[in-house]
Length: 172
Image 1 (spheres, rainbow, N blue to C red):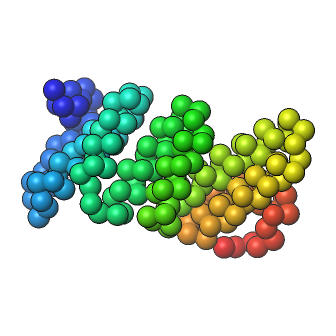
Image 2: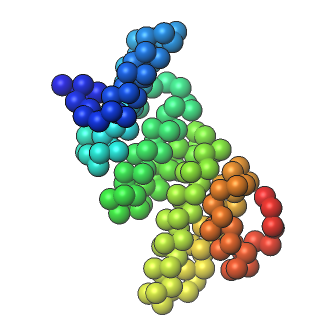
């Protein structure tokens, strides 16, 4: 049984009903509608913490989806799952693939920065200051890009950029 038929809570049921109505009235091909259904089921599974199921749905959505923008969001969500599982290198691969398609995805830019920042902090703790500095500078560059796109977001990153001297710009 598809995930959309198993939703137990009101919000999921409401979302599913609305998504199904939109799918019926939108002038989209059967393949596009099928790709969206897999994406929707992937998001639902991901929200429930069912990462293996979510990945299966996202992989199927990727196989069917032709629209580059939609593909970038699918790849981003796959990256989220890998990051949640502590698979940072794999998450970075998917985030970078997403950004190669859609470089204006601030949430992907932010998540890349977060991983680089984490890796930089780890390198510093391990006594590798050159590696730490390189990773923290990478984090700074990705955060600057994210902030340029979404200047009202990532306030902590903006503060970190200023306090570490990695940026002197007050407003992006």
